[in-house]
Image 1 (tube, rainbow, N blue to C red):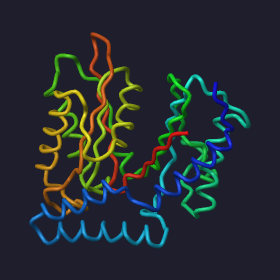
Image 2 (image 1 turned 30 degrees about the horizontal axis):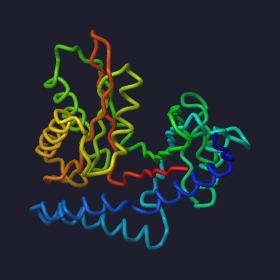
Image 3 (image 1 turned 180 degrees about the vertical axis):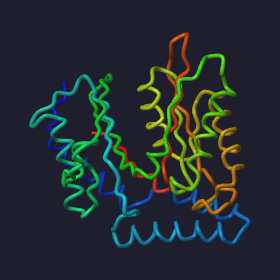
Length: 281
């Protein structure tokens, strides 16, 4: 049995959310640069250049990549051989997010009541937290700062099994087409297939955080990722929604077993800021 004080988790969460809001991952930077090479029009190239320059300024000055510093999401994979001490884990995660957004002067965007009062909580909490108990004595943390320009463009649909691959493709492409310029393209498209309604949505969120350039290990799903990426980029929405061949930088699919009568599909769109970090304690 391994003992971990939740104060360590709180500090790590704070570090992760500061880092993701200021510093762009190497793979995302490279994807933007590669896209500049593929674009043929000066306008599309210039939009991508401005995105790249914005990334560089944010990292150099340690200021937010985007004014919308997102709603905090944390996926926790907790090893069953870990014994936690200190404050409750959810409280530690919440306090870590709070510290990051207060100390980093990051915009606070969370309202307590989603429908009636809509009063800002003032510290960007509470975060959305998902727990999974796994074998081992480690704690895996995945943090995401999700802006709502892209989150608002996400969709879920309960397809029929007979809709099959073509039905999935049609729904994913139509979702991106309907979103148009709103999610700040170029985008990363996370697709969750299977499970139940909420499981498909969670899978799509996880898929959107997968490293750019990685593929689903299942060859048929990997091939579908590539097909969808090509079809989405043929929409020519382009960087900034101003046309071009780079509407999406990646399409990532995650899947889970489902009921014989169902085919749930969720699409979670992520903007080009794509702010997420992982850590293992």
